[in-house]
Image 1 (cartoon, protein in one colour):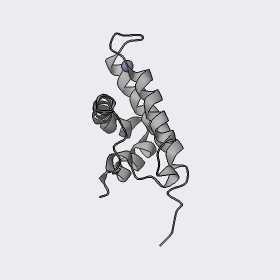
Image 2: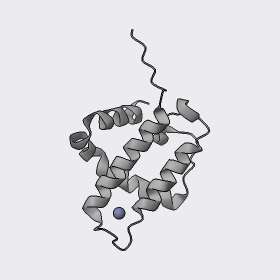
Image 3: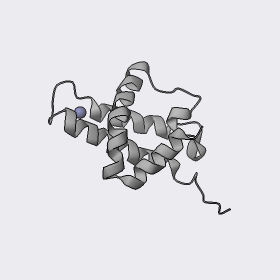
Length: 107
Ligand SMILES: [Zn+2]
């Protein structure tokens, strides 16, 4: 079996995926500067959490992670974004989405 370095660049990959999902969600739910739009804050938060992830580049997918490092409110926001953007990512960013789904569904 061929071994691919799956752990390489995992953090930056998750950052890109998370940003794409948040942008997609925001475009459809909030107009520019809309009230209640905390998408920028959410993105900054998500990136900061990834930067500080104690698992580093060998991290599992965030959903499968045993450390729940998000605050409850950020966690709720992120879950909503993921639930909505997840299926739509398949059309916009097929490779990104497939990797993400793969990371998530493998248990
Ligand atoms: Zn927004």
